[in-house]
Length: 109
Length: 115
Image 1: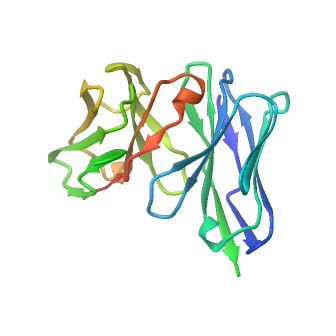
Image 2: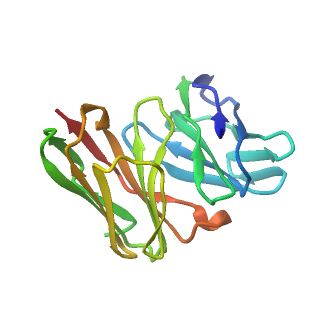
């Protein structure tokens, strides 16, 4: 079966750095997406990785290792507004997105 | 209107009612999706339409019936629902289904409660 694993909840301090991991087992791979979802709101796109390596976009970076079935989202200089759920999703061989359950990130002052 | 809009935002219905959810995208996209989001569970893909043709029906119960009259509009018709169908129903659209074209833009969702 297809499976996406990510931690249920993480806590970090304002101004710090946090890494949210995602491991996957899917039928085929056509890229990995990270989305941010604030409570009561719709998910919004953060990043897309299809090749191995690190993609940096401002305070957020996303890493992919296809051989290990592994990705992480790195958030730097954390702000209170970064408190949200972070969803990992893999595009499988049928071009369908397989979603993880999300990691709820709590930022403390 | 910009982005992806959904109506209604909240819906309470009895198990014998018939209702419809509406989604409209103003982004010129070619693919549209219906998702179900329940607490602490992954997003469940219900239906995908690409260029107005349904690509996949992921074994969704027949009490959910999609309709895509054109590339900008998507409906989800509901009838004889069960209490376990209570959830947030999200609509999304994307330029396409392959690779980075699958970056999906979501509407605000319809919070559905079945009594």
